[in-house]
Image 1 (cartoon, one colour):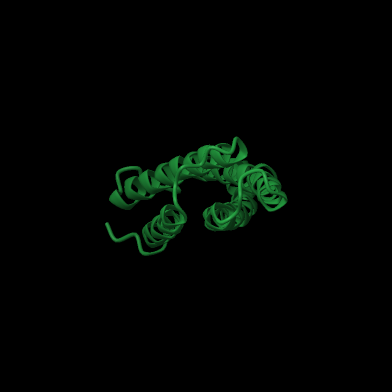
Image 2 (cartoon, helix red, strand yellow; image 1 turned 60 degrees about the horizontal axis):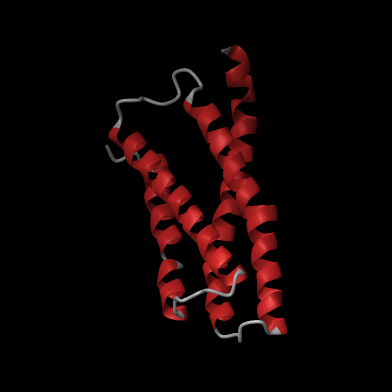
Length: 148
């Protein structure tokens, strides 16, 4: 238990860095999809977007999400840190699960672009681009304000 508390500030710092990287990827991927919609299938420009999307997802966004989850679970199971019956905790966890679901959605959308079978308009991705922002607001408010 003492070891967990000794590691806690380091894990918390790593968690914050991972969340920043994760959110950056989730903010930027739908924006790339908006631009990708404007390209012709099979064009050099479309192929360039495929490379950018793959690298952003696989080299930054996926590892950041995994790290955020591992650090978050470590902190959640640090004794006496979280009041498990607090309402804010359940709302925050639900929002994080929804964020992970959104991550899965942007991964599927990337596959559609990769296989040249995207059927969604740019407007869809512009709207989808707002989802991580709304979830982030909920998560930050729950963790910092702890309204209930």
